[in-house]
Amino acid sequence: MFFRRKQSQATPASSTVASPLAPVTNGSAAPAAATTFASTMMDDYPLTVQYILQRATQYFPKRELVTVTAEGYERSTYGELGQRVTRLAAALARLGISKGDRVATLGWNTTRHYECYFAIPSMNAVLHTLNLRLPADQLSFIISDAQDKIIVADADLVPLLEKVKDSLGSVQYIIVMNGPVPTVGAGMPPLLDYEQVIADAPTSFAWPAINERDACAMCYTSGTTGNPKGVVYSHRSTFLHAISVTQADTLGISGHDTAMPIVPMFHVNAWGLPHAAGMVGTKIVFPGKFMDPARVAQVLADEQVTLTAGVPTIWIGLVQVLNQRPDLDLSRLTRVVCGGSAAPRALIEGLDKLGLNLVHAWGMTEMSPIGTVANIKAGLDDATPEEKLRYRSKQGYAVPLVDIRIMDLETGQTAPWDGVTFGEIQVRGPWIAASYYHDPNPADKFIDGWFRTGDVATIDPEGYVEIVDRTKDVIKSGGEWISSVQLEGILMGHPQVLEAAVIGLPHPKWQERPVAAIMPKPGAEGALTPEILTAFLQDKGVAKWWLPDRYVIGMAIPKTSVGKFDKKVLRAQLAQEITLGE
Image (cartoon, rainbow, N blue to C red; front, top):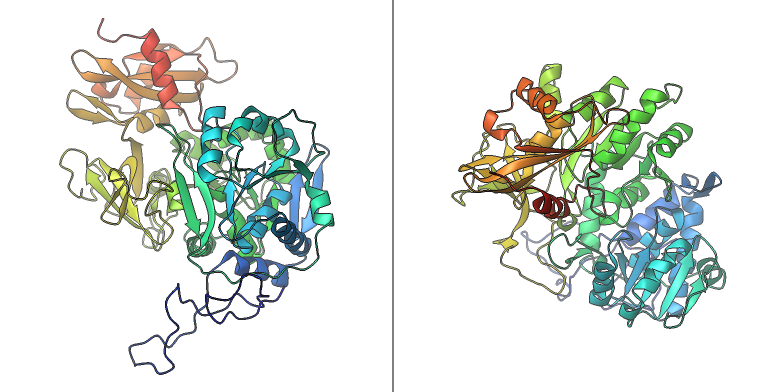
């Protein structure tokens, strides 16, 4: 794939682009031929996904792309990807897709889904990844709000679209991938076969000139309060975020890695790993929908994965499997990236014993998503193992180009980096949202160029962030703050506890008091009591006034669509069953 240098942003969309390396005017007039000394003397070109696609196919055409299937492994290469991406873009253009149109995907982590990651943005349309785990009402709202024109869906997920067919008014076609086109009832848009669509398409496509600030992709928040909110990523923000993921002090993904993103591709573009991988030629293993801990462990070993990423519940299950399967060789696995929620210290220690390095990262949909990574920074190399473990148990320090501050919950003023003062995290940077789609400037979320994350944290003198709660989950008891996240982390360090979620419930005297929901490990169902858990917390130095007033042992803890504890649902369940202070 070769691109012609773009002369201006007015280049017609139908013209052949031989190179994305072109001057950026961002809609302004072209610079005059004569420049002053103060003018830029450096070449400039748009930072777009087109460039990542070009680089992946030109430099790394033989690097493998692997998808886990029910039968085993399906193998492809970046070179084949490039050919299929070209055909897919041509096919979408034939179906009427043009600049700015939203093309949604509803799919598992597969190579075909990865083809959409490049074809849609590179033709100047907008990739909109739909969360397949959302309830029908939220999925319906998102499709209607985005006004998706085409949906590319896995065959086994088409029934989800049938449930929301009344919201598909803007959808002209559903393209079915990774399986045969199913039979559907009346009222659905026409269904097309993905492979047939590609086979019938031309082998060449006139790639349009793209302004780096054009929309590239969009994701919606999980909608735990109110309707989900749309976040639109530009080509520029996506490109810069991909570069950040390749930096040694971020995730350090390189062409020598084999990466397995277990984090869903519908969740903030799989944390930016797919675009970063294409930029440097990383071999990618897509787990499809086969993500149970035993299968994950086997694939990690079979493909000699060096970097993987997912939420803590995945790694809790992995530790259990690996303790039972010492025959699995995961010696190549150097980074187990953990995000979505805080990993308990016991999980980090459990992986350490297995020779696996958990790397904490923190971010949000509005942040593309990476904001901090818990690497051991320069200057701390001589810290003791215990000190390093304390830093690794936090969410890390800000990656380059992300500014961060915390605002005191009581005073609303900037809080000190003392590792003690609770404050709401606020961030800004080139891949952090400045507004929501259809909600351009909500005053409660964007203030003076800073995004209010809603996460409550402390920042220590070294700059390491430690998440203590969400603003809606932090517990205020007797005028003092209690961190549900820290309590959960300690409780999950008990050798017989699998999962623990802590919420605050109303109390007539103390305003709120903590209540803990506990899921024991298999075989330990009858071994845990409130007295045992309280004694364990006290042995770990937990203050008396932090100790939960109640324990609910043995309940299934509800989770969100991306695997986090769903405390809104848990709080509602327990509020019906428990009245404190009686």
